Image (cartoon, rainbow, N blue to C red; front, side):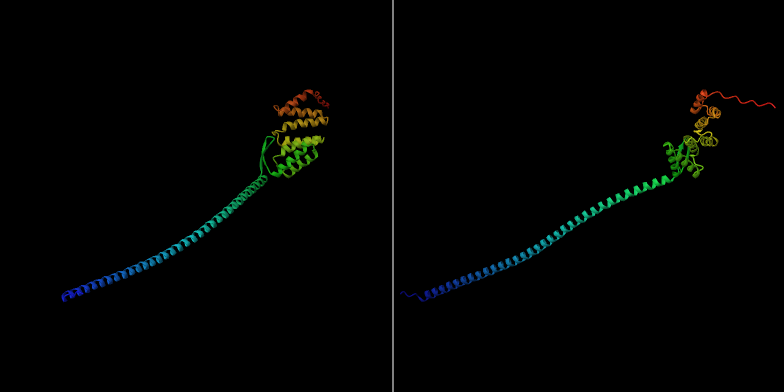
Length: 272
């Protein structure tokens, strides 16, 4: 074995010591680096955990909001359906009200028409009969119409009773002249010629300008003929021609006068 000089030996020792120091520093540095890395990893893990927790919290809050919105939407849908149902009921109610209103209006219209008809029947009416215009009460008109209907059915007795009842109840009736005329015809139908003449004469005395006056004179002449009073019949026909020359009754009187026997001369008065 070779022995190194003492200087070399110290140098070698120093070199070994430096090398050992360097190796220890490197090992320590490596140890320090591993600890920082682990700490950094832990920090990252912790941050991730915190982030995950925060995200979970946010997701939970978001889910809660979504759930709340879903419940709100369901409630709104329920409210909408309720509103639709209410509107449908209201629409049905309105339709019922509309029908009821239409029915009330129809009944009101019918009632009004009925009232107006009743009032109209109670109010005097203006009529024109045999060329004469006058106002009559509804009952007055009814009595005359019923009596005339009896005469047209050849029920002369009922016609006479009805016309007399009209004249007694309404002595100033506008039907007065027409009633006298038809009374004369009814009596003629009953062969009551004197009563017929009296009725016709009433018309002539009260209303000589009445439209039925010429016919009344002609009817009086017929009554005298039925009574075999030809002279009275002739005088009546001559009266008719004189007072109503342009009427059809006057023309009929002229024709009848032509067929009648000549009038008997008046008896001479005895001289005293």
